[in-house]
Image (cartoon, rainbow, N blue to C red; front, side):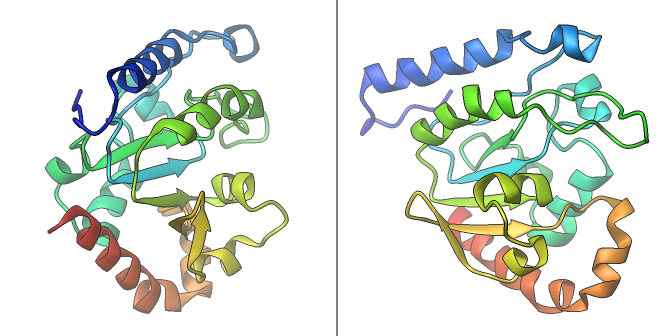
Length: 204
């Protein structure tokens, strides 16, 4: 855990205790039907707070955020950074609207993450983490912060959360191919701007 001397010891302890509480949370176990594995990654002074929907089954098994095809695309193609840079906890605080894999839905795909997780844990993380910018990934995360807005509209806007710059990205899942085909300007122009800002914030 990295510690910034400008942050009080009390504030730092509060953050560490919060991470321990999240890691130990089993609130949704009866609803899920399996033991949840909350994913907590990043330091208090991480430069970028990245917020997505919920961990995938792969991440549930490995306990490593974005350790899947979506993560590889996000790191190498979109951000154009190394795995080492992405998984440096001083660079990224990686979190989701829900901290655990929610299981499969009856109609296919993953269940929607329970909102109680964001209300209980994410709200506290947002208040404590000393990040410079936010990156929201996917429609569910975008809707949590910008309810009623269309994902596509948000993707092409420069936004703010808590007075800090915020950017919305579509989910990098291979299953999202139709959205990319319908919106070629994202890969042709928009993601280049976002990746440039990411690299600038990281100092690379």
